[in-house]
Length: 399
Image (cartoon, rainbow, N blue to C red; front, side, top):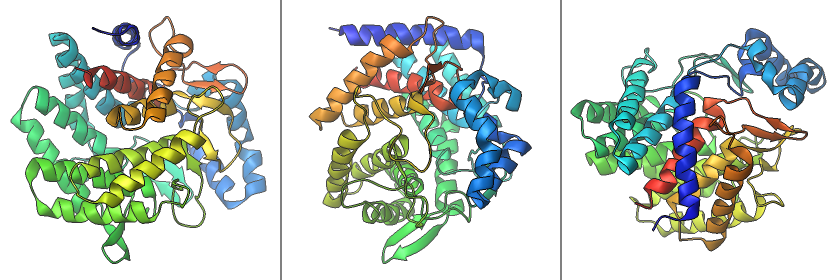
């Protein structure tokens, strides 16, 4: 017997697919304000000089907080591989749920797009951003593969292969796994403990990056039975466990500067450990997950029991809640549903509130609840594709 909640989820998903067909596969993005050369320069100044930087980025911050529709004035709509991977997974699950060939066709379409949008300068399949990304450590050029994006490509091809096997998808998966193993190198932190790079040869000490890589390599070990994948995964898992704070939280990085604690990166870390737990027999992983979940449920939800962006923020936050956090909450909770009662309740509450206050009649979801009002600009990478996949996953897991 399907529950009323699940009926509502299915109704929302059907309307979302209709909306996506009309709206199209490119969208504005939450990085629009900083993706142009002016935006990148502003961020660069911000990282160099706090006072001058705040003055320079103030207009973008104001627009983001009060005039989100102005994104289109800063940067044109984009297609982002991470969104295509989430859409591919969502449509694969919709096909499995409803047996409609149109959904399988859409899944295959997004996989074809992923094959075309891979980072062309690398032998193996991998994906990054289609814009230059200014970070505290410098500018990451467009087309640079990211270990926080590439695993979603692997999972999209894997899910499609399990539902409707195609040998070419298996080859892509092996190629993605080899990229994660050979192109994303490690930095030794201690004996049998490595922090992987965020992208080839750079960006170490970011905790969710190592968790992503460990999760992907564990999946690849199970699929291809190559010990190399498992050896590397173990070392990254050890780094994640050793980087956990006493209270169960994880800072973004252990570099002494980026010590903020936020919602979706916490979810990323936990999801990677949960994937690793299925392959690596190590009680420390289970204990780390339990401590992480305890911190998560007690510190990363607001008074309405909705995901809140930060428990320890790096700067002023101009929004109260965002769709991306809600999507990752649902993904995380669905992965370990039944293990933690408090988490199950929070996930159910998040779904219910999404379907009441965030789901719009047009078919898509609100992107953010701002300090005043809402940001209703649909951004595929910043919540739309993730929440579509998350809600599909919720129903798919109950089949």
